[in-house]
Image 1 (tube, rainbow, N blue to C red):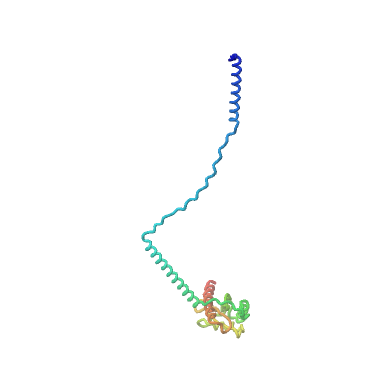
Image 2 (image 1 turned 120 degrees about the horizontal axis):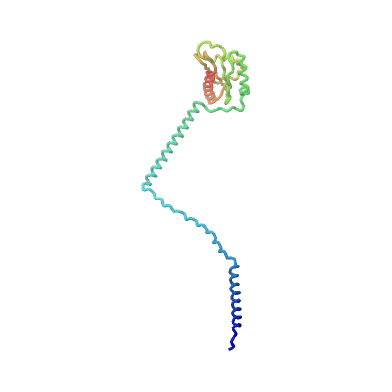
Length: 231
């Protein structure tokens, strides 16, 4: 075998070392130059629907007794409700019997009985009579109510609708007349003031209309009393 010189061995060893350094450098560069791979984020977890909770209801041992008590209470309340409704119907019937029902204005009413016409006619008649003045006119329902206040001294005792005859005569309405009226006064026997409230209309009005007119007149007398006393 051919023996190599020392110089040849050194040259070969240097070449091997250079090659080893090159390979190691390439490997290190590849590792260091590569960007690290980030791990994928896991997908969000899908919320699980909660299972319905089952509640065990334990009926009390005296359930039948409680149901019976509830039935009895319902029956009592229903009885009270029936009694309340019956009382309300009875009260309404008594109110209608006492007050009557409101009377609307008829379509074919005599033009002289219309609110503005009858106000003007009574104001003129009272002035012509020289015994009274027209105090108020209320025409919320048919027929109108007219309140006359006497201006002459009170003669005699008691209160009479006859005192207002001069006003009625001045009207000159032979086919229309007083269907209801009430005379009243203040003080002792009317010596502090006298007035009358009248409903005027045609003959032959139905009884329910007359009943309602009488109730309205009583209410108007009360209101006029309070008004004149405060004056």
